[in-house]
Image (cartoon, rainbow, N blue to C red):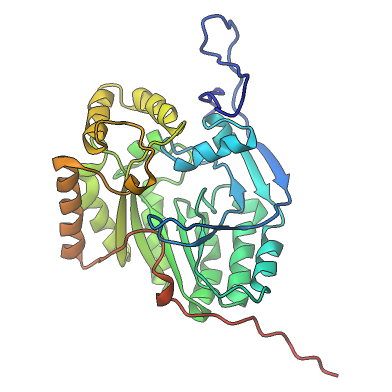
Length: 346
């Protein structure tokens, strides 16, 4: 499904071309996939915010082919000189030395075996993973060093690694969160156009659960007027597919994510777009664009309270555990030691 180049203004660039400008009489080019290989300086990002459920994350890719309209990572692509719109979806940076960097980190005396989240920014199982296999390489290193891992993904490519995930689960501790916030493939396709279909995600969850891997469901984001009424159905499908925990995150539109989301919203849901905007404002103190990170997961007002109660009621009814984010607290994981090196024969 080819689409034209469309990026909101990058605040770090002094010049730009807006093909929607009345003075530019040129059709925008198609946004084609461009892959940029780099040797990164580091692979782990450390987070110190209490609003995020993990401390360390590994991101083998920058940008994401899935093209989710609401993705909070879009703004970070601008630091690379790219745009937060179609550039984020089609100009993908690959950290080719990611696996070696993680091994180096594990060899440091300072490394204490904290949980590693894959990934904190973009999907570690986006389509390029099928050929680059960087996420699988990172998981192999984690299994070797018995380091605990938490994965969150929308992609069915994770099925390829079920053997490795089962091995990792035996020697460390692992949980895989499948993100599926929409009840049907059509709605999912409208806002997450190149991610795996919603139906495939629940099939993937069942496959992982049957392999003995702890799986959970992420309802992220909740967009009032689009998917808040689907919460009971999604939780039931998750439970039937083997989910043991669930969490939800209210839509957050920071920086240049807002214009990308609004353009997609108007195109996909023209008849209810304004009602959705009003509902978002009701839960975000009258604003569409939330800048306070502490408001990432929670909203305000009567409608948000109804959504939160609906979620918690069905979580209890289905016997699911509540989770506040991607990871368990680190104290619930094993504290791994170094990988044992083979003794020399002579």
